Length: 455
Image (cartoon, rainbow, N blue to C red):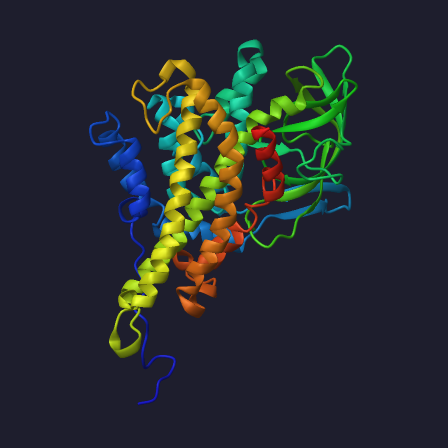
C-alpha cells in the first residue's frame, strides 16, 4: 500500500532522559565537588535527581509552551483613549517564575546550607532548569545580583534589608524579582553616556529619577536597580515597581529569541528611587551585580547546550538509517558526537571551576575549604582567578553554546529545525542562546575587560 497521512513509516519518538543521571559531564562535576564521602552528596543527590525528572515533565513543558506561544503584550490606552501603558505576561511565564522561586534557584546560596559549595549546588540545579524555564533565568540572574548588592548595604538600611529578604525568599507569594536598567540609547555596555538624571527630593531620603532606558529586560519585576547621573557622577539606585504615572512602557522589543521575556523601552518621569552607596559610586556598586549575572549567563548557555546534546543523544538511540542501523551506531556520527561532547565537557569544567571560585570568595574566611582543591590555597588567590576567569568564561561558554546547539540541531536533520514538540525543540534553545554572547558584555567588551585584569 502507498504511504498516507495515517499509513506507512512513523518515527519512534525519542525519549529524553533525566540529565542529572544521563549527562556524564554534569555527573562528573557533581561527584568531583560533592564526592561520595562529602556530607552533602547524599543530601543533594536525590533532590537533584527528582528535579531532573520534574523539569522534563509534561506539566513544566506545557508551561514553557504557553509562555512561548503567548509572548508579553502591551496595551497603551484605556477604553476612553487615556494614555496608560500596561504590560501583560502569560500564565506560563508567571508560573515558571514562581516555580523557580520555590525551588530556590536564587535563594540556595543565601541559605548557605553547603557553605562555600552552596553556589555549586545552585548552579548544578540551574543547569537542569535553564532549558525548561522559558528564560525566567534572566530575572533570576538579576534578582541574584540585586540580592548580593543589597546584602552588602542591608545592615545600614531597613528598606534594603526588606528588599533583600524578599529577593531571597522561597515563598512565591512574598518573593520579589529585580530588573536591571542600565542600557540607554547612548551605548550598551558603556554606561558612561547615561542620560537619566537623579535629583534629591527635599526632606526625604529618596531621589526623583527621569530619563529613558532602551533595553529593560524583565520589565514586570517588583524592584529594579538602575544607574542615573547625579552632580557627583554616575550613581546606583533602587526603585520599587510599579509606580503609577512615573514609568511608561514605550514599546516591547521584537526579538529573535527570549520571546516570553518582556524586554521594554521605558520612559521614567520623576520615578522615586533610593541611593545605593554614595553619589558617584554607581560603577563600583553595579560591578557586584555584573560578575554574578555574567556567571548566570554562562551557566545558562551550558544548560541550553547540555539539553541540546541530550536531545541529539535521544534521537540517535531510536533513529534507524542505512540498512537498519541505528544512527548512534554509525562511526561518523559517533566521531562527530564525540567532538561535540569534548567541547561541551571542556566548557563545563571551566564553568564550574569559576562557580567554585565564586563560592569561595563569597563565603570568605567563614567557610574557606580546609583541603586544597584545584590548587586554590588562599582567598586572595581565588579572588584574583575569579576576576580573571569570569569574563573569559562568559565570552567562551556563551559563544561556544551557540555553535554547539547549531551542531546539535544538525544531528536531527530537518527535525532539528522544527519548533513543535517542546521537549525536542533545539531550535528554541538555539534562539534563546543567541543573545547570551551579547548580554552582560559582548565578546570584544569581555576581551577588553580581561586585558584590563592582566595589565
